[in-house]
Length: 182
Image (cartoon, rainbow, N blue to C red; front, side, top):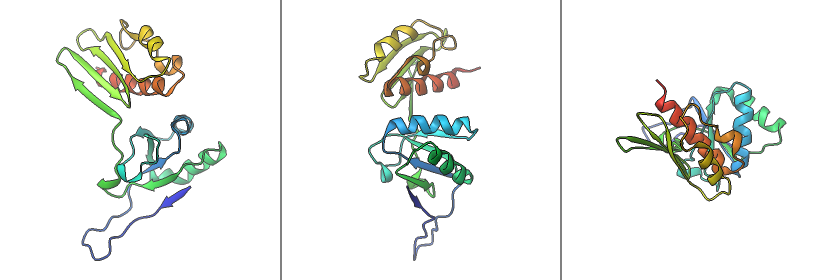
C-alpha cells in the first residue's frame, strides 16, 4: 500500500496542508464493498465516492474516511487481507473524491443515479416507478421486486442483489431515501 504525505509546493504562495479526510484506492470494486462493510462495522464514518481523476486506478470507487482514524483503518484492512492500492490524504480540491450520485428532478419524479444504476420515485406518493441501468443479471429481478413499492417499504437491493449493479442500486436507493426523508 502506498501512502502519500502532505505536499508542499516549492516557490508557491499556496501550501497544501494536512486534511481531515483521506481516501483509500482499491484494485477492485469487490474490495471497496468488503472494506466499506468492515469499516462501518467498526463504527467509522466512511463514504463510498468516485476517485479524483488524478488517482484513478481502474476501480471506479474509493472510500473516504476521517484521516485521524488512518491507523485503525489500515489495521482493519490488514487483518482482513485487503491490500489497497494507496491511501491518500485529501489535501486540496484537486484530490477531492467526487460524488457517485447524480440527481435529476423531473418535476413529478426524482431520479438518483449511483455509478451505472438509477432509481426513480414519484415525489408525491414515494412510489418507485423505475429501476434501470447496468448490465448485470440481477437487475431485472431487482426491478421487479422494487418497482411499484413505496420507497420506505421496498425490499433493499443489498439484501437481494449479488452483483456490482445490485450494490450500486443499493447506494442509489439509500441516497433516494435520504433525499425523500421528512
